[in-house]
Image (cartoon, rainbow, N blue to C red):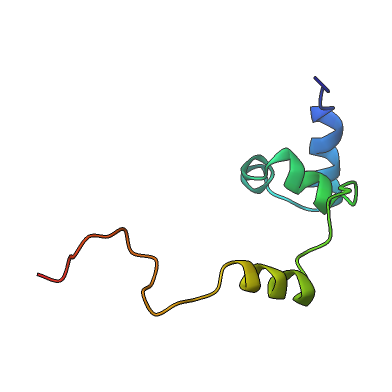
Length: 72
């Protein structure tokens, strides 16, 4: 398991980015790494990806109900 350099990250987040301690500790490590420009991550979903998902899971008139008739 990789260890985090918390003092270094705190300096980068609070001194370098001007985050308050509360803002710093509210971030996940992944969010902090992205904020510091160290996140590799994947590209956000583009239009082609959205179209592919829509084709796989089309909207329908029945909705996404759980089978419960909750109207009355």
